Length: 431
Image (cartoon, rainbow, N blue to C red; front, side, top):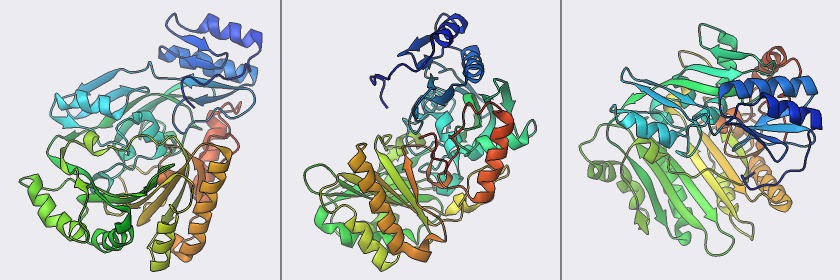
């Protein structure tokens, strides 16, 4: 959904009037459905009125659908305050994006551990998991969180920490948008330092050779390195082949990284170009937020047959992007404060993204199901996840039954009117 989308009216006149009378002067009710808040009390008023009038509610943004029927969208873009402490932590409003926080933190020689995209909102990353380009080195962005402030479905503004409301602190990090509307996040920062990354690109004819080399090469990488293999098929033209790479280890310069780590891969087939360069973590998170609808799979290994099937996903006429990502490293470590994120032990992730039309969505889902059939027991019993946009991240899309039940119990307590019902990961009712 884009800001220019025109939505049909869904609100009764009395609810529209109540919203307009309760919102602050800087807030607005747009298109009779979108509440553009200006301050936190606007969020509180909106959630309470939604519950009182039996109207569902969702957060406007990537991966947040308005669903059908009577549903309000809360636009938190104006909650864009950023405060960075020289002691090594930051407080950001729900509308702040990683690139904005990185810019402010740099003035203190600090940097955030971002999500997959620098354009992603910090709040979305936290509720969606947070697998960024340096996740193999430092873990999830959500594991760096000190506190989350949110308005739960009962209309209460809560400050959630590991000490105060530990169960909600567990759930909101990776549990999706079902537990409340986030208004602010506090998180620890890293010391700024040289990191290297970017991507190498090859001709379409080299796809099979590069994938074979990537499989062998990535298995040898230390935890300081992150990488993914990317295939993209545009509406017209040849398939694109790329390898993304991020390095957070010690090195004197970028040449050392290229020579020591990338030479085995680059020597397999001559790249068309290389964009590996010194970057901050926000610069490493170069992927733009995906606007299509995608499916994802988590796996423990990639067999030869599965590698062939992966290459076949970009054949034919359907435009799509397929990314095979290396997990492991710090992602598999048990964090000091557990969260709702599951499947930390998975070794690889596959993400298939197609267009937004009905036929595109069906083709993307069918593609992922075909891959799942070939992968078989390499999936470790994990089911494919369908229908998500940029967030939640790959590890949070298919929670285990135990985690889903625990999240549902939390949501039932924090949201007695079921204002946010249907937003739990794995629950498609609200999509």
